[in-house]
Length: 593
Image 1 (tube, rainbow, N blue to C red):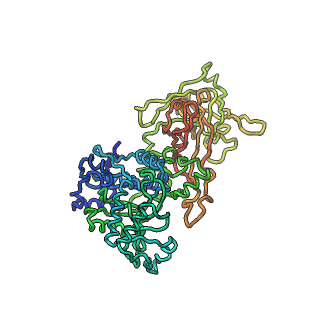
Image 2: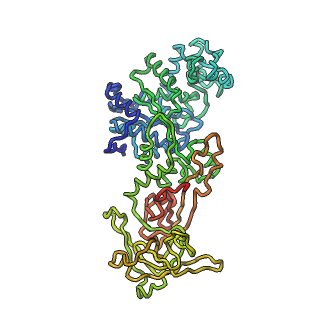
Image 3: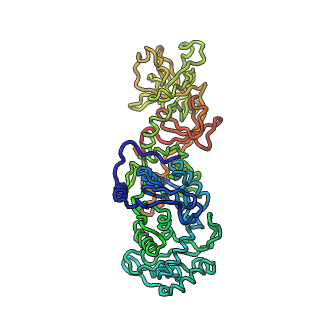
């Protein structure tokens, strides 16, 4: 697998492309040569030199499933690297052993590959873990201590919080801030050797407790956690903080452009301070990476908080992380959205510093744009109502059925034709009949004529009802000489055309009609209870029929049901004996209309 190639049409410019083009013009990183990383000696020895023009990274923490917001970052980082002849690394920022699991690592690898991206370039696998660099991070921490730029603080978390100050009040120095480097080094090694309990002390960078940027008020860079790590086991009982680990990872991997979302903007001064300091101490070599922030992807009718998504799963409001209503990538995949549609939506959303919202409808629009030229067509009946053709014998004599055919795709003759049978009894959608039709209703009602798509014209003559007065069948007569594709097809003018499935060869199917999970555009805005706006109609399961051309459809196959929208065979539950189709999107957006 390789990263998707850049489109033939020029991409719209944005501030990140401008920065990259400037750096390429100036040769800012032209002398860089990558041969593995200090944290992975075996890789370093085996990896050939490469001179990627730029180097980006996608660095998730393996503590949950990726969601649609991550898709934007994946598309941006891998896309920019491919566009400018560079390399994008996949890196797991696994610095918090209590929340990280191999399950999440595996799911992230699968999600990034499914979106169409790869981190293998020139035979080199650019997949890394922060935990690969723990030895270097520890050495760097000792170097900071020896230079008088870090100290062990034994205040309680509450004391540290109180002494940090706020935007109007400078912080107060810790009583442990004046310790000598030798004392701090000894104390730090005691932390490493497991001689202190979780939370008893932390290692802090010594910067400026009066800084107007609170993130520079001696941030914690190491804490004690007696917890087993998914990658390093029980080797360590101290772990680096994310804000300390991340810039070091970037530098060791020789990242050129560290692209992240705006919530990390306030952390950039510490990012710069740490890398400049480690370069000055001789542990890292310039030119160092630089961090650039963009506005995250916010999509209406969606929540992306891992905590809230987990609550939906734990409380069984949804059917798991891959529920087709979830904004997780596994959920979007099971719903039937294509990688191409997700990448297209992310590209159309743009990249800027300004925050904003992308309408969920743009994802469905991208899906339609992607599948319009790809998805084969078929007919399906979602809520079946029997249609009886009362003059069948008169029209067709003793024939049990009449063959019909239609193109698999109207613009792609190479896909061939699909075949199905017209018989004396058919299935139609219940909404296509009205005993007392409203104004503008052009489908079946007594006395009205409609065309059965790909077949012929029929005239409704009435209906049958059960004892409760419910319509159980519609009655109609065939209008002679109106077969589709014959000279008389246009002899009788009708205003309505309906889809149908022959009762004799119909394939019973379960159809899962999915819609947006929430009824409000911003379900958790302003601290609202997001569960209060759950959409009670976000999932509706019906038993219907599909045409026989779909009998052997494989799981994860997409099709356009004429009039009804785009559907996909469920990748887990679908089978030939029990077909299951998920609705991805309707043919046009009618939400809220």
